[in-house]
Image 1: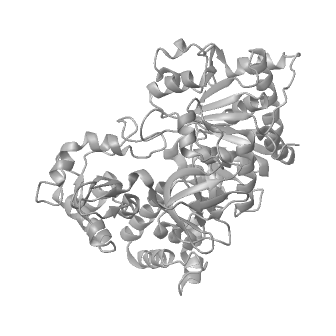
Image 2: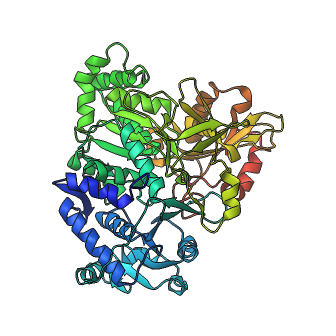
Image 3: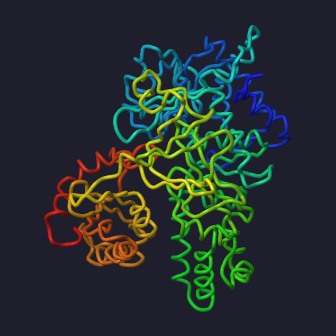
Length: 576
C-alpha cells in the first residue's frame, strides 16, 4: 500500500457508506439528485467511455464547467484511469483558456454548455494536442456526455490501470496576478494526504448536508467536495449565486465553505434590517446585533444577555439559513475578526484556514475547540510551518506540489532542496502554534519616509463597511498612503438616495470619508489613508482587474487608474 490512497479510492470509501444522495444539482430551478449507486455507475461508465476514446494514464483532460454532479463524475472517471484533470474557471478569459489547453497538452476539452463554449476563442480547436470537444449539457462539440457514457457501457475490453499516490492527478493553473498562469502539479498523494488531515479538523460529525457555491475549479472547494464524499455527506450545488438565499432555505445545509465577502454581505444586510426596523422589534434586533458583535471567539462565550438574545433573536435569524446551518469554513482571503465574532455570536461556528494551490491547498486550519481571532489556525497533521528571517511563511509536508509544469526554474525558486515551500506570504506564529498572516510579500511597499506598509489589513478594515465593495491601498515611494475605492451602490442608495448624475454625490464622498476616518483612528500615522478616489465601477474579471479567484491585479489597476492616482498625490482635496 502507498503512504496515501488515491483520490478514487477515497471517494469509493465514502460512497460505499452513503446509502442515499451523493450529490444534487439545481438545474433549471429544480434539484436533480444522484444516489451514491448512480454516481458510482456513471463514474465507471464514463471512465470506460474515456478509455474507448483512447484516453490512457497520464493523458490530460481539460474540464471547463460550472459546479455540478457531472463535474465530479468526469473528474473521478479521469482520475480512475490515471489521467490528469485540468480544471478551468468559467470566468477564465478566452486567451487564458487556449493557453491552458495548449500548455497542458489536453487531448479532450470537456465543457458544460454551448454558451460557455461559444465564449472560448475560435481557434481553440487548432490546439495541436486537442482531439475531441465534449459537451456535458446539450448537443454541441464532437461528442456529448451521454455519448461517452454510452460508449462506456459497450467497452468490454476495458483494463483498469494501476494508479498510485505518486501519480500526477491534476494540473491546476493558478489565476495569477501577474504573468501567464502556472500549472501546479498535484499528485493523488498530495491531495488525499491533505484531505484526510483536513477531515480530522472539521467541526461537525458526519453525516451532514453541505451546500456548495464556490467553484470546484478552485482547490479549496474541490478538496471540500472530496471530503464530503469521503465522509458520506450529500453535496448540493447551487445553480445561480443570486438565488443562494432561497437555496439555503430549501436545502437546509449544516455546513458551507465560503469566502469572507459573502459573510460581510450577510452581516451588512442584517445591520441594514436592524436600522430600518421600527419600534420594540427594531430595538431588540439592534441590541442582539451588538451582543453578537461582542462575542468572544476564543473563550467561546458572549457578553451578559447573550443567552437571552439566543432565545429571542438568534434562533429566528438562523431560520433564514434553513435552521440547520451551524458551520461556516472561510478561506480564500482574510476573515475580519468583527465578522468572525458576529457569526459565532449568532450560533454559527465560523473559522478559517490557510493555504495555496501549491499546498493542495490547506496548510493550517481551525478546529471546533481552537479558534482565535485573526489566526488562520494551526498546522494540519504531517505539515510543518516555519517563519523565515524576512517574515515569509515556509511550509513542508506531503501536500507540497510536485512543481510547476514545464517551469523547473520557477519550481526551484519556491521549493528548497530540503522540501520547504516559500508561500510568498508574511506572517508569524504565536507560542501555541497559531499562524497569523500579515500580507503578501510582494504587496508590502515602502513609503518615501522609509516606513513599510502592509496594505491588506488596511483594505480589510475599509471593506468591513457594507458601503465599500473593494479597496486598494497605494503609496510605494510616496509620502503617504492613499486608496482607490469602489462602493456598493445599492447600500449607498439606501443612505444617500439614488444618484442624480454620473458624478459622485457629495453625500457619498462624505460618507466614505467618515468610514476612512474611522479606520484611520486605529492606525499609526504612517499607515493612515490620507486621500482616496471613489471609482465609478467596481473592479471586474472582464476588465482584467481581477483574477478568476477575485484577487486584485494591482499592477493592472495602478496602470489603468494612473491619472486618478497621480491626482491623489497632487490635488489638495481628500477625495475625487
